[in-house]
Length: 445
Image (tube, rainbow, N blue to C red; front, side, top):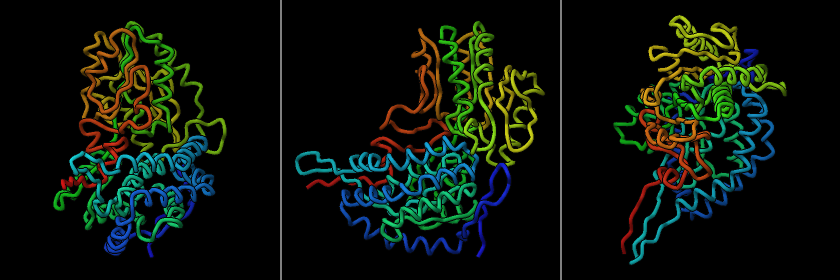
């Protein structure tokens, strides 16, 4: 039986392996999921909620093991990995309750009602950068809606996915949640199979392939397709707060986060002060192995991602950008905290998603220039404005699904996670997001 091996991105040593789900095995999973789903869908919503809540309580003894595996598999420092796992597990009951309320039958009066019924089988294809949290955000509403789920995790993080699913399945009915391990061949076979919905987080290019393959069966889609988030710093902004945010957002999870700040546009009148403060904050970060308590920037997940960041930096310096901190050539597997200024529209730093610990800065003379450049992108996941007078008006002109004003993106609990333009197709989170995993049915008696 072929196996998929997971490697530590720092030592390149094998951590463990899992059996690969070959394309020929996908129909077997589908048949099991279809049979189990019929029984699962007949249970009352409240009973499904109770079972899922119990299943998440069963995860508690495995929290430490899952956090360590996230760190080992993709390099996230142990503090952030522990936070990701703890938040997912401890929030399980609340999340299940929130979803159940969204999926409850709505009575319209005059004996009419809106029901939220199962779709059937949902394929969840999750990313490596938040391997537990992102998988959870998609599979729980799918399960509560009465669907069965086949989870295809990233091939970079198969081990934590295996523990997660196996632990839940100690409580869940057999066949309701299954695992398909492997690379893009496994994912493509799953997308092309007899399923009803695909929930995906990943790149635009992968999303386009999924959309094309789903077209023949008119399968439902919810997709988050990355970001190239801009930050606009106005001349009346709190410069220190803006600089601190720029660094924290750009460096979170070693920059490997879809809502990381990727492009900073700062008013030329305050640029020097802002850049000095950015460098000062960036110098406080320490790069290293996940198990060192002082480390807050881990490695790039793999050689390909490491090379992608370096290529963008080299492209920028060759076109006139200046490094204020760091360099454009780092040995594997780390990218040191990097601050670069003089970003222009012809640079890959401005056009592409970087996904590394880089603060890329450009100066503007007029706010309209900053708004135009912020919007000049295929992406539209998040955007942030720091400023006082006029900041709200600038935010209104930005083309993104989530916008922060002197604040990070995302909104409070219950807000949707949503992208504009090619960053999103459908969305998840919130009442309406949870309902995308269900078939709306109107009954008029």
